Image (cartoon, rainbow, N blue to C red; front, side, top):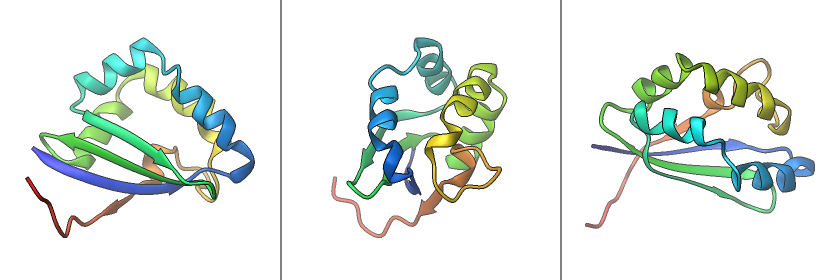
Length: 107
């Protein structure tokens, strides 16, 4: 199991909408995440819109992202949240993740 941390950025004017949407993630989206290896998945947001994510995945972030890219529900979800992010251009939110390097872990 690989532990992955990543960051991206939500536009400050859309933080409230981002938080609200994630209080009600579609059940079929949650099922797709589980099916494609996204386990113990958490998102954290700062007041300036910096978004930190943590996920545990058996095959690594790239494989988990590729699995989600093949899911129809993910295309609908990404289209519905695209406008909430800052500085990602034509990328989807998933494609904008900057994967962080783990430097310490305490079991």
